[in-house]
Image (cartoon, rainbow, N blue to C red):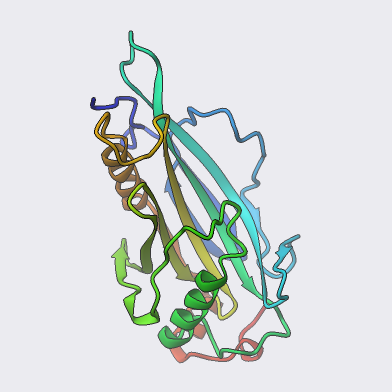
Length: 234
């Protein structure tokens, strides 16, 4: 069964979020799931918002956007929704007292940071011990999307389902994270009854193809010279 109802990114409006001077733009198709009722503003101050502190105190996370789309067995008749895909856009911040790395703009530091977070996975709201993340920092591939380099990878609950991550530094202290969670009304996402997994993969690709990030002048200077956080404007 091939699901229908994949969002139309060609006709979707643009959404812009200002992250302390860094501009995030992406296509925002109408949400077709009803689980998110939060309002997310178009501005987010990276160094002053109400983050959720991690249990180990090393960092913090805040959602800045959520949406989701349902897939159906037929748009006119049929039994209805067969699955869907949720997207979370988050800002992850290093705690001001945490100096375990120099800068997230440094590739080795960013890889070390991401790997440590994935080993703990405590900041993932649906974390589960069965999820398998990349086990070595060098296993994190880099994908360039519209001029921005993303660390991109999947977590798997092998062989039943997966989650996709795209992460990129926007300051010495902050990662911008796109997390995609697919789901199926059948017991497992990957099964012989439908192709929800393929529809979700296509939607992830379409979403990320329309993501544009323009770093602030301050962030660009820090990125260029790998300055320490104390040397870059907050």
